[in-house]
Image (cartoon, rainbow, N blue to C red; front, side, top):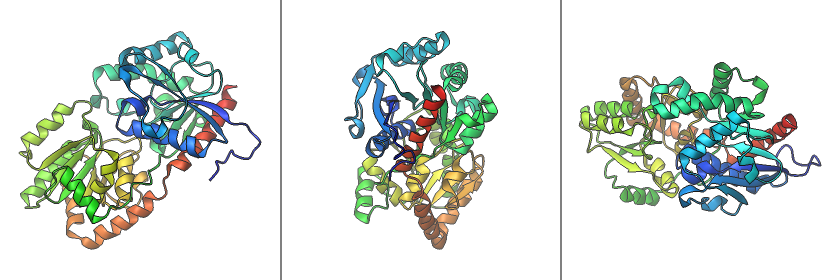
Length: 390
């Protein structure tokens, strides 16, 4: 399907996209950046002449799906790179720009925008550090408090991944409303219901021997693993045999998460699977009796879409963007109440008709989101930024 700007007699717009998150991370920012770059390259070539840019420190390279896209690099350690981007803004010095192709739009896919003389687009995923500052390290919070208002002000157009993030931008930074464009994230086609054999192999690969509940996301306090552990303790006290499988790498302040498991005497009931390969995720989602997303704040919430696409009943908090993403396909709970989470899970486990309806509704809901449309709408934002920055 061509983008809405195709066929208007316009030549492809040169765009440099910061692929750094896809190179250095494994969580939501990495997935967003890799999938967007791939979808732009595959579907929007008539509209976008795409080049990538990233910091190649530590010998990191582009992931295979986007490795064939032309790319430029710098080579700086993480902290000099981040502080250098801020210094460029403060000094209005286009140091990074000298490494880039001569023209076009720059797209900052994470919260890091060096000073550019060319038009710039920035994706804002969330403003968690403003809403829940206790869930960031002091150093990161201090950096973002100084840098984000500058980056937001400098960008010619901003992509917000949800209406909730857009509202935060307007409320916290008085960002002009016409500058902020909501573009939903997508879901990969390989997230679909796995067959029994695939589920069995995934369970064997990760030593899952009992029925299980599932969480997917970086292990950090705002993901609210602590509430899930408390709810699991309630369910175990009632005799439910389930384990809780936790997929995700260690993030900010992980130690408190680990201590909670030990304090609740759940060491044998919580399986920390780590960062699972994407190829294993659909089967893990499909085999879960229930997927839990009790987050305190999400900019978007891709794991909810993935779980629904794979037929897992979803219990989600009603915080931030999650009600929009899940629609009418999930059960929603107060993210501060372990009793509410345990009760919602209990409903799914004891009511096969409800679980079946949630599985069917989830698959339908997830089908509304795709990376091809994300890329097409992003290409339209590039045109807006180019016109505004010219």
